[in-house]
Image (cartoon, rainbow, N blue to C red; front, side):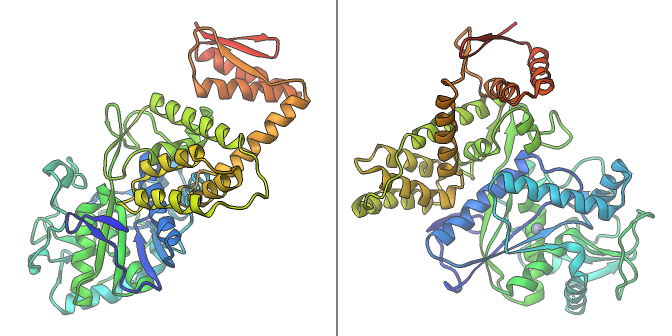
Length: 483
Ligand SMILES: [Zn+2]
């Protein structure tokens, strides 16, 4: 397979150090708040990469950290401590916040069919590892103590800037305005390995160290956790493009200075999810979470499909209209698959070879997931029996993870029971407009009524009314229009 390597700025053939085990590391979430769907885009695309590597026969060991200490609001170690900020906001302890948002993160992952990495390691669980690395970096002159903290000395490196092919604005992502500069640093880009003199008097988590009681910087945790579980030769390191600088640049600096040789061969970065008004963030505009998508009647897997429809190295613009389109595409795709008849017919091996080749050509070319989706339609159109088609759709779904066969089966059952109860429930809009979210709500109201849950049915009707949707029951269904 070919993969774009951000470190070399080229698409390269992927050759693991040891084909018997691909070692993959992904930066995990800082668990002080819910993840927004822009954060989750990175995890979806990394999940596709892991599953595709497994699909083509590589065993993979994937490790991810959970940041529960040391990450300040500026990625360049300035500003407020994110975990403390979350704890204050919710009047809880830092550990309670960490547990709650770690669970919430994996809940979102489950809904989006993102596989849990083989190793998930909270940063607070590897303090000894960081101390070991920092001690050696001090001994070898790569680090220095100043004002009570330990810093990495970037001037000791021949080449510090690794991911500098982005524009200045991108490079400055982590270095936000309005934070005071740390005067202990010898060089502008030096970063903290260990904090002891913290401006946060109420820092909840601290540990003893050779340099005094304190806590680790954010960057050291990924180096420490990766080296601990994956050793000194890493195949692939992934993350959102936000992490490229300074986080990944700092990871390379400290890891390679520590081990004394080249560390990671391939770097994969997923580009931003933007809103129509710019980069998505937790503080700006609507806070877009998986739960919000569900509340609005969207299947989280429609969002997964939305992400797969474009390339991970392109910025993607999110709007409700775009998500509606993805939802419509998803529903139509499921309906087409539901129309196939499962049977014991023999698998058509020629068809399997031909169609798999198309799929591999797409995914093997720097994860072209959009062509991977097209390969699903190629299967549906191909002149072969339904058993072969279902077999292939299931096969491709090992990578795409859209629950294609499961949803199709559900749709078949639903259609059968609708027939049994005297026909389908039809939803029509007066203007001919199609709105998947509205239709999903109307259907939910119908289901609630059928289950004699009239309070819920009335509540859904009120919600629709509040959104300016007027609903009229008609024989065999409902009609709606915007008022
Ligand atoms: Zn990281």
